[in-house]
Image (cartoon, rainbow, N blue to C red):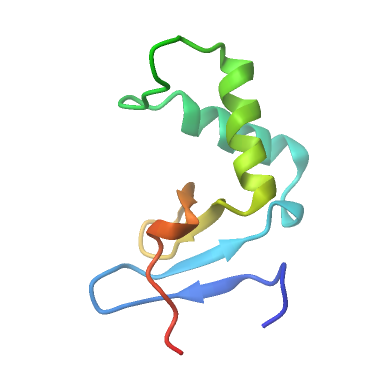
Length: 92
């Protein structure tokens, strides 16, 4: 599988995901996904409150570095941002 291709990740205990490269979405869709993610209840950004723009910029950097990925949940039919380290490992 080449970089940038959607990637299916499944396990017995986790629903299946397809990883979607940000480049496969419009800039507007990526921006909406980032905004949705950073405005969810339960997100904690430390001692100092950040503006929406700062939060989006920080998560965008993580997305650009590959630390965060866009995962489309096949069961729930929805996309979200997920830490790459939290996804189930692919079999070797």
